[in-house]
Image (cartoon, rainbow, N blue to C red; front, side, top):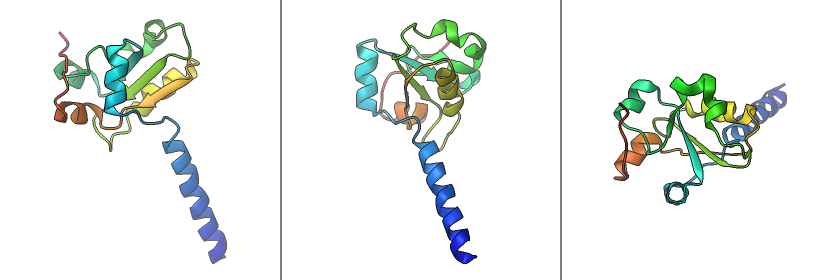
Length: 129
């Protein structure tokens, strides 16, 4: 019985690890390059109040735009979509990433440091009106 419990625990952890890595991380350097080349769509999943205060330039307020997000994403389903939220512990990005995935997008990544890491690095932000 103890072996079965250990096996189930192992399988649960393995399944969690696989689910957590479903959307690979993108480094700040690679994200900066994608932004500079205008080859990324950013989905900010922090909520509208946070979005108004500071977001990565060009990001879409996912919470405010969720219902029409399909109209805001590119026609190319292989386009780079990057979802982010507050920081490395935040999981709100998953809602944005899953929505893009349900719409058929196949190149979805996660910026794990989130807006807090972006600000901490000294990278520029925008405020919404």
